[in-house]
Length: 349
Picture 1 (cartoon, rainbow, N blue to C red):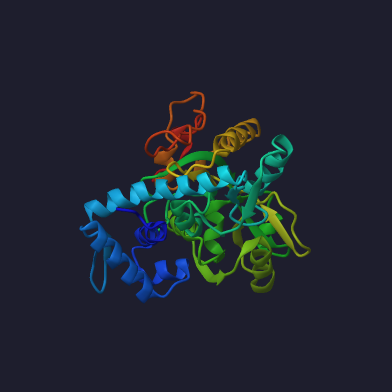
Picture 2 (picture 1 turned 135 degrees about the vertical axis):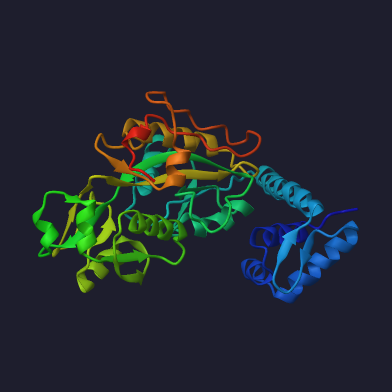
């Protein structure tokens, strides 16, 4: 029998979302149309691909096989069209948001690989980028691969890139602004402003774990996108907020490093091994080299803190050299572990 690639795409998208409404929205079709097309596909195949009731949608064993092979089929079809038409789709890279270290990598890629075509997107979080990574609509994303509210997916691989020290952003007249650095315990006396996009589930999770670990208080939570919005919230509401300390700040605000311990925010590159772009390995090698040459992967010499899932992922033997990024076309998922992290520097869980 012949397969309709449109129906294959419908099945793959539904498998990503496990929800007919969300899948239909992504496909820009009516939910009834999607449901009818899935039923038609199952009838032609003679096996159910999904089980569903009013509350749940799940893949059957046959559905898992179909979706895994279907992803590859869709990628092969796109590559065939590109080859015949002598075009190459650009590498689609998600850098999370402006003002983050991941945006520095874009300039590096342009400088070191001027012949590498790519597009830059901003999904404001790994959780938001995840569905597009799973479908192959996105080739490379950055972020923390924990606290996403859903599994990464069997086809996805990650590579540790950086450990960002998180400081505190303050109004210049705040009592803590008189210190050169702020002990993390001192924040307990000053309720925090928590700023994040709805899409940034992993940042929500990191903040909640830090608040719980150090008995901090939350004054208010503000929704918004990007560093500019976060700084404006601190200016208006006058509460301290977690943030990077290395960027330019507007008048009226200052930044101080946090200490004893230094809270670290880990971020990784993530890609889909089943739909890997031909230029992906080259980009990963450049990113890996840049991150190591700038020591992004190294924690501070002082006491530092990471949430337990991140510590477990980054656990290594002291002094071992970091592994290079795994070949994107290799079989199965992997998490490449970054080296030189010393577990003795972490705070107790």
